[in-house]
Length: 195
Image 1 (cartoon, rainbow, N blue to C red):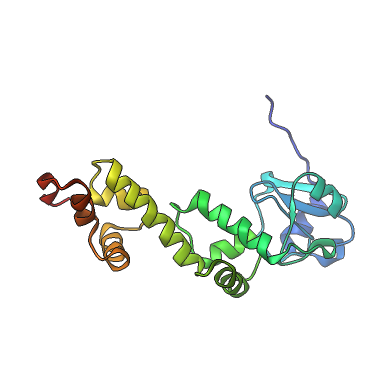
Image 2 (tube, rainbow, N blue to C red; image 1 turned 90 degrees about the vertical axis):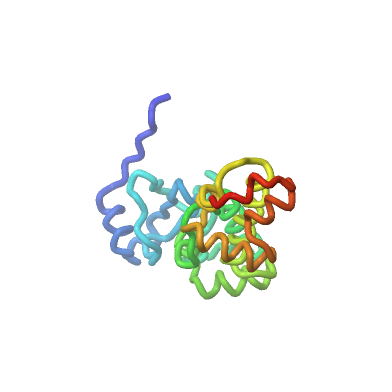
């Protein structure tokens, strides 16, 4: 299947790149990778040009499965807070092994870090960082139980930046090191060896 080419007029691309509010009533743009659409004046990070789609109005963007930006609120449309946080949680569920911080989450979801943190904690009962850590630790538990991979490798596979951080956080959250957890599951002395 041939790749579809979406030509963006130079004036539109300039408006997007410069957050030019004079173009706000002329078009909207959507970003294929985030499925979010914005006004040209949106102050979000400039997307990669090849991921941008142009729409005549907000309804055309909605019809193509794009959702309104929380930052610029295109055409006055508002995404309910619960739905916005669920979409962010879904994104985290798919990308939790990648490096993620609050600024990146706010950027990809077109919201402010403070607002995202506050709403996420209110609706999910934990901060985005705690949510990410919990997902990583749950995956680590599965890998420790189901594989013979070294602890350091499991930490990397779960998105932890280094083994000491993984082991420290694991022990803090679970009361034992990953190696001791694995040993308690299997009761085998072969895991007494350092990883």
